[in-house]
Amino acid sequence: MIKYIGDKKIQAKHLASCHCGSVTLELSLPNGIEKPRRCDCSICKRKGAIVGSVALDGIRIISGADVLKLYQFNTNTAKHYFCSKCGIYTHHQRRSSPNEYGFNIGCLEGVNPFELGEVVTNDGVNHPADKQT
Image 1 (spheres, rainbow, N blue to C red):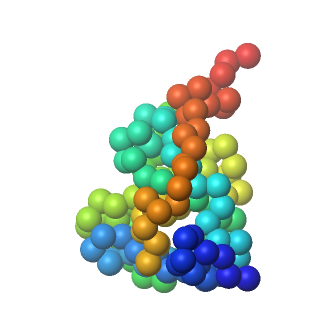
Image 2: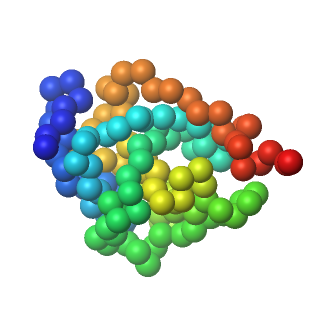
């Protein structure tokens, strides 16, 4: 299945890379980019990325596994990955849906995240996992 953003074709398999090209990912996006979003949690508001989601088996690291660095904070549940050479955030294992990766739509080759139209902002400041009972 092929989806479109405007007049741009989004194929089921898509390449993504960091800025310097050291990290290259292959993403399986059979339904195109679904539910693009931003988040206002402490890390997301600083990185400013528009994020999509993919199943854990939907990302394959083609190159650069050795330069990817992991960053965790707070509950240490989410796993945020970035290129240690250029600093670009590429993807993270989600805290709210640990069976998914969030990925930086800006890293997708041939996709301009500013052409996605309206992008919702999730309330990460008041994340349900942070609520004390």
